[in-house]
Image (cartoon, rainbow, N blue to C red; front, side, top):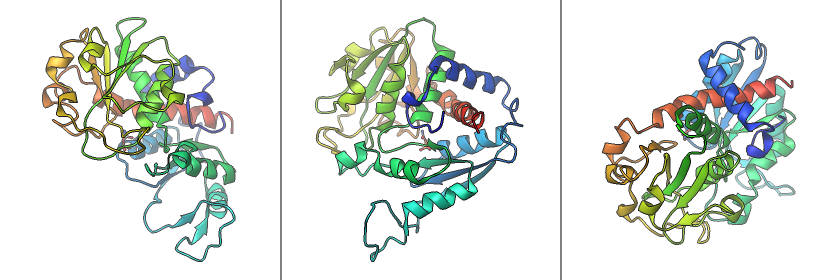
Length: 314
Ligand code: CP
């Protein structure tokens, strides 16, 4: 693995999930692997889980870790050929090349504009970093994907599934702000590489990008989708077709104990952060059905598995 931005970078998904579970059982087993190596993590927007879990993953592998809030006061120009006589003080060509002098692996969290769909879906910022960095790069969430979250989610499903082919439902839920589609896009492409039965439910107008949702059944009837489900993966996302818009805040789409009762003793999943009693009722989040803290814990071992793969090639 050279770079890590999507499930397409993974040769053997089952092996990577097992590697994460194996590292979880003994997190310091490979602490010699990263000795003398530096991980630089750049965050262009805030993070609790990704920042701490990836830092811990690097430390568990013996790496030195440097974190940088890249979104505040550091105005980078990402376009080539620009006359830089405005607010942008440094070009990505120099910035990525310079960071590569200090880092053996770079992690980057970028973000979508939610206004320019073409640019967002080209993952322009992430790819400009990849283009001009000379060391491996891992996505800590991009404009359109969140691969470390998805790997942690698959580890969590593997740990909790009771059937060889569980029914996994991706359900939209309301939210007061316009949120990216990245977690949902990524979840679909990662679960699609497993044997799970995958169903999407959302209100009309919330279809996800065809490159991610192609071939997956969609229903606008949330309760119908929940019937017999083993995992309810909940996430808000803004509209893809009316790009970045909030089309509904219908509270009847919130996840409740009554809806969870329609499942086959199903588990509730969410990447966090989550708005209580907007996205999901307290009665679900505080129940034994909730896997959200397990998911957050598995973020460390997902990151450790990916870093382990890349370190093994250096
Ligand atoms: N799930 C997730 O990526 O959380 P953070 O935004 O806190 O990193």
